[in-house]
Image (cartoon, rainbow, N blue to C red):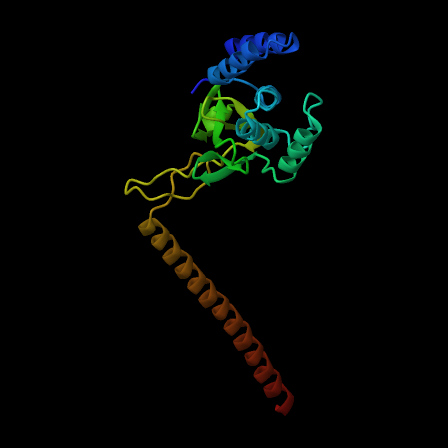
Length: 253
């Protein structure tokens, strides 16, 4: 999905102009058209829903007004009551604000061998029925898997997650810096991952090669022990011979 912006922004500007001129019926159609076109940013979407709520309230459609205010408050829960509302309607707006479920979105990472899978999770915002999407190259995707090639020489990239409504309007967004995934180990001929240095370029040893190398190490260690034992034994024998010879000389007449 590609998020539209130009047409919806123009429709919103037109609706704002109509609203300011008090042509509420034309403004209502304009705000609805802007929402249906998609591509509105959170502040724009909240304003459209809030003003639709005001128009519904002043024309006596209370239930529609509440529904629009709930959607606006899911995006901007701290917004003050509109000054265009009557006192009892302002009180109702404040009550809705207290019970509002603010929408938020987080970017989840699932790291794999040589790649990272990104998904967007939406919390709150029940009135909007928003769903999470990951933005990449101006496209809103359900999930995004990046490899080291996507990062090039960069160690990290900034990735954006959004909560969008059914028309493709952005209700919430967040930006997260994602680190490049670790380089996956090369696969052996049998398909199993083989550990080794990615920079050395030397082929990994097979199990038989490792066993042969281990056997040679043991053999060399045994020979070393035997040689060392022979040297020690020779020294002891020479020392003992010298002692016997000395004793013989001591007792000779």
